[in-house]
View 1 (cartoon, rainbow, N blue to C red):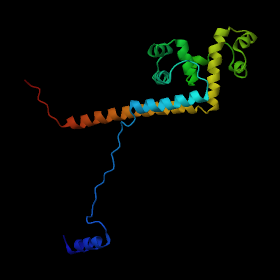
View 2: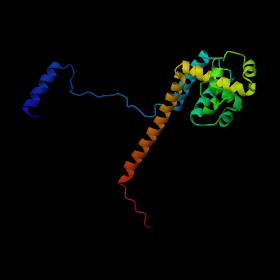
View 3: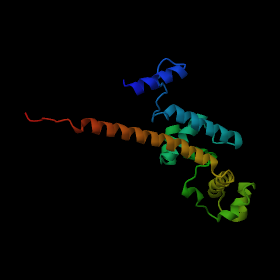
View 4: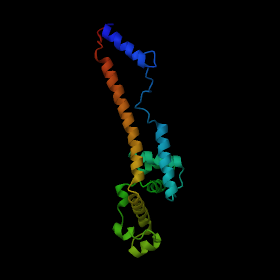
Length: 198
């Protein structure tokens, strides 16, 4: 240690209450796998329960089953596949999806123009069907999908956005960690020489 360094150290020791120049840093390291299945389930449950408090859920499924419907809808499963997973009917899954404002394009293909129904959602569906000259069994799911879409738009698609954020976070976490593992393995094995001659 030269004179200048020693002089600086002495000055530091005079003004510092610590007896050493360095101290350990013990901040926890972050992880790409913080978004685990339990966390995703907890967040989905929170959104579903808030929706159930705000709207009248009438599909008759449990909160866990609603969460399963949401997960599988975003996985691209059909209503038949979701119904098999939650051991229910396709009609019940449709009701659960619309409870959660989760719509497919086909849900909005109806027997009449949307405006003919959208302004009359509070009317009795059978009377509305008779007035519009369409089959009530065909009008009911269409009317329900339009009602769900109207509710979602009124809320600026807030709940859909929350579902997508939760499930996208989980997908990104999985994708990133898989990539990190693959890259790490690739780097670790790049310089390994293999001799496979026998």
